[in-house]
Image 1 (cartoon, rainbow, N blue to C red):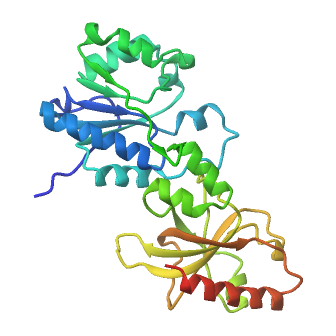
Image 2 (image 1 turned 90 degrees about the vertical axis):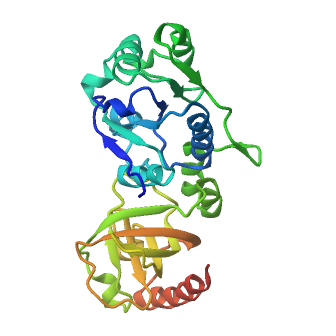
Image 3 (image 1 turned 30 degrees about the vertical axis):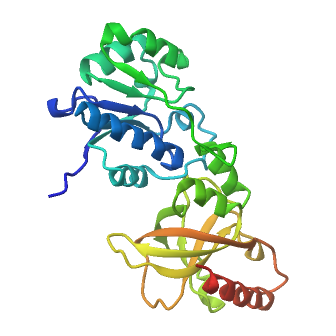
Length: 310
């Protein structure tokens, strides 16, 4: 029987999960750098016979403190939890990041939460980890409390790939520039968006290419354009190949960013269903066409390219 990962929303964890290895961070995208961290945590788990837990925050602190930051996330909370489950962590604390929590002093975070509530044995953090009121806490401060709190701080070297540090910032940058293959390489999987299919203006249907429309919400805004994709409905493993337009639909004077997905060989109603859309290849930039006929011709060319993509 496979052990399931326990999800907590507070620091009141079960006694079986105290005295564990705790990895703290946003883990946005759970990319190759994060995956290296979890591989190291597994070695500690085996060596010291301890459980592995993750402490992450929702919303991401950067988005909490700056409400002007909208399109930022590589993965939703649900996706992040699924990726962490796949890495076989024993438990996840998805702590709500609110005004009250943001005002906790760094020393209180160390003594009251890490030591008393979690009884952490090993704490894995990145070198630039900051915490506590006004980000006053640092890795150096954590290390100072090692002997007092009987935990050990582990700060692994960042993962370098082709002389670039694997980071969420780098992946966001790749996506925004349309360098999808590079983003996918650093993620170690295809970047994907999950969302609920909405009723749109039926424009795709009118020109012969019906689409499922998704609001991208807080996801990072990848380069507007046409992409080869594959998609599946929630609770299914059956992917269908397709093509997607991520953008503002300038030919139709669209004002809001939207993800429109046309699935090959699909006939059915997807309204109000949840889709996971994986981005395989960037095909071309979004552009404004003089008329519908020009757009239709271009879509046919795009379709051929999307169908050939692996």
